[in-house]
Amino acid sequence: MPEKATASSWNIKPMPEAHKELPLSGVYTEEEFEKMSYGFLPQDQQDKWFIYLEDDWLFFHRSWTGTCVFKLEIVLNNCKYHAIKAIVNRDPEQYRNTDDRQDVELISYLIDTLLLGRFATLPSPQNMSEEDTQKHQQHVMGKKDTDGIIKLPVKQNESKQ
Image (cartoon, rainbow, N blue to C red; front, side):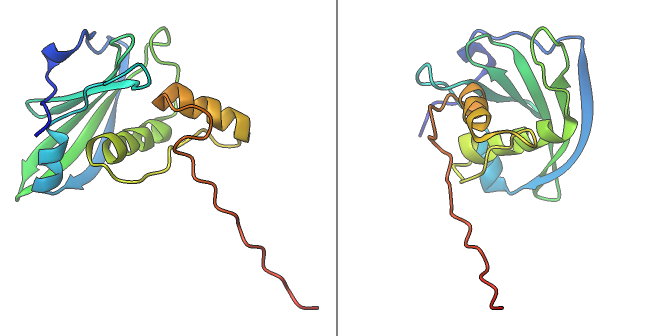
């Protein structure tokens, strides 16, 4: 069994006064919640996130700065674990994104990839070039070049004329 991450496992900062609450409606099984409860402890400099569970809250911190970017409230109801709200850092000195949809997608991505070990596509801002997408991925997840980006060719429909 891996070591469970706790608030004392890393040098972290609290959620700043400048934050926003986002209502959610995600549902996790008992098995998924158990995996999530272990959190994520960075193993090297390429790991950009530190995640831990405390009481009903899943905390997401940037590993290098300790900045709290997200808090996700998860409550047990009828044998299922419900993500009911997220609190998102809106201090522009700590976190520059202001797109609520993208934040919710990023939280989901981090849970899927880092906590549940699932394949997921990193959400990126719309209309981003391939080069900027790679830079975005390296900034958010610590991957270099195209690590973790799967490029599938799109087969063009050949219409007979």
